[in-house]
View (cartoon, rainbow, N blue to C red):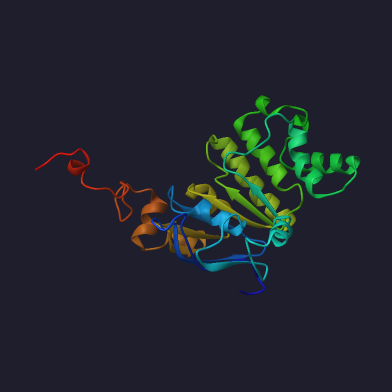
Length: 268
């Protein structure tokens, strides 16, 4: 780990049970102040990687290091201290539907600080203004669109001015305009705050527009990494297939299974 790295993932292997390995001996480095994309097909281990960084799970082998400190999932005091330094945009927002937009963004401030209510109000309105939703502060979650809800979740993720922001599929389900707005927000917020951002996504175009560096995961291993320009120029078949969205290539369409005749009990 170098001083320029906020997080390193060192030779990590992980599986939820012994029968299936999700990540196999992966190593990644996330530079301070940069936006790094973690891309790959569905089920390749992208979200699992975020859970390991957040200390939700412990690696079976290897380690995750946050600012020079190995994460110990058994140390609750350490986990709370480190998590205070990160913000998380969940794949489906995970907003509290019985609270207003304002109350959703205020929630982490009330949970993790002892700030007076007038200061919390000012911070919440400032964060909502940053994502263009200050005028929607008193709306309920059911009254906002999907794209607006994603921006509310982003405002909540940055409420505590985290050093690390993790985005799990921030562009999923958004129309082209909302997708462009979300991408620009991520880039502008990262540049304005100096935070380190990790984006898990399979949206190549949007990730390449705003990312400084990217990793491509396939079948639980790193198959390519570099700047967007370097990945676009890669000759690796797996990288090319994913970047170009080609249906045929080394990445199979079918999940491993027995022959179809055997599955239906058909005898030759």
